[in-house]
Image 1 (cartoon, protein in one colour):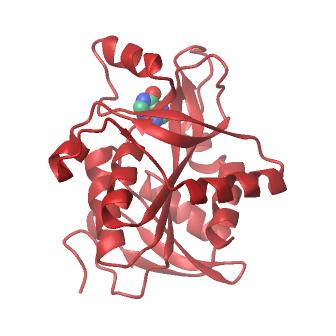
Image 2 (cartoon, protein in one colour):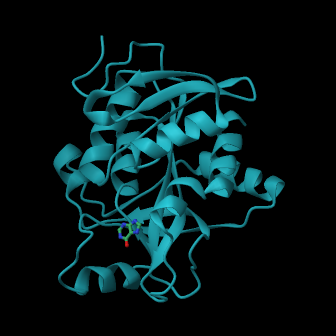
Length: 236
Ligand code: HPA
C-alpha cells in the first residue's frame, strides 16, 4: 500500500506535486487554490492533498526542512506513487544584493556541500540540475502572468544556524545568489529516478539587508505570485 511515511493509496496522488516545506502551507495552498480536495497523508503531520486546479488534478504536500526530509518524501513520490514532476515552492535567504524580500527566483542549478548525492548514488557532483524543460515552462508562464522570475544558482545548505562564514563564502564564490535547504536533494532524486523537478523560491530574508524580513504569517500566506506561477506551470 503506502510507505512508512505516506499512507496514500496508489492513484491518490496526481502526476504533478507542489512541495512547500511547511505542511500547513500545503494545507493552505490546497484550501485556497484547489477544488475538490482530498487529504492523502497525515503521518508525522506531513499533510498532503490532491485536488484540481482549473479542472486538472494537482497534489500538494509538505517536504519538511532539509535535504534528508525532502529526500525521503520526494523519492517515495517518484517511485511508489509514479509522480512525474515535483515543483518545490519554498522560501530562501538572499546572499546577493540584487535579491530582495518577496522576489521570486527559480533554481537553474543547486550547489551543496551535502553528501546526499554521494551517499545515495556515489555521485560526487556538488552541483545538481533541475529539469530544464520544466524550468522553460515556468519561465513561459511567468512571462504570461507578468511575474518577474530570475533563474539563478541556489545554495542548498545543510546548516541553518551557521557558526562559520566559509560555507557561505564558498557558495557565493560558486555563483549562488540565495540559500535554501532542499533543492539539491530533490534534483538528485529526480535525476536518479528518471523524473523531473524544479524549485521556485520566494526570498523571505536577506543576509545583505537585515531589516528585510517576512513575518511568519507572510511566509505562510503572502506568496501568491509564486503559487499562481507554480499552479499554472503544473497544468501547462
Ligand atoms: N537559510 C537557509 N534556508 C532558508 C533561509 C536561510 O537563511 N531562509 C529561508 N530558507
